[in-house]
Image 1 (tube, rainbow, N blue to C red):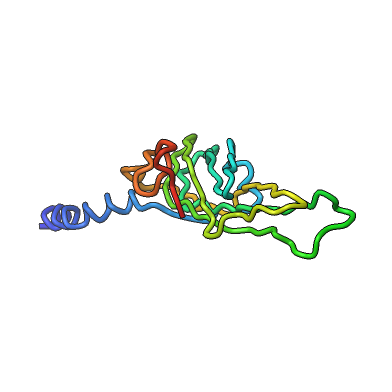
Image 2: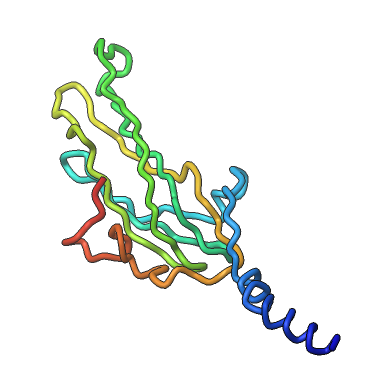
Length: 162
């Protein structure tokens, strides 16, 4: 009788026990590790302020929800006599796609308001990783690294847009 109860108990809990093994854990990567785990490269700035580039996952974990800080810094041609208005701006972009370990993904960001063309200076743009979520354990997303959903991995003619 005990054997039958033990078998029945194992059969009843079997799927739950297996399912517990595939649960993924997500956590925000600590700030001191972001620079070593994620790299932004091949940044290209287009005339209207649109920015595109590549995100590289150098970690051993899957990454998602990469949050990028896009800064357009206005530099005056004559810094000793700058104008009265600062045209600089900064905006955030969250790239929700999952990037597998060692993988990469493409991004394109178009500002809601294009950068103004003005005299007396120019914009200098940089992009850096602000935060990222690391996924450990569990199965990978079936579309991880394929760019399905929001544009990562898509060819340039079909960019991710905010």
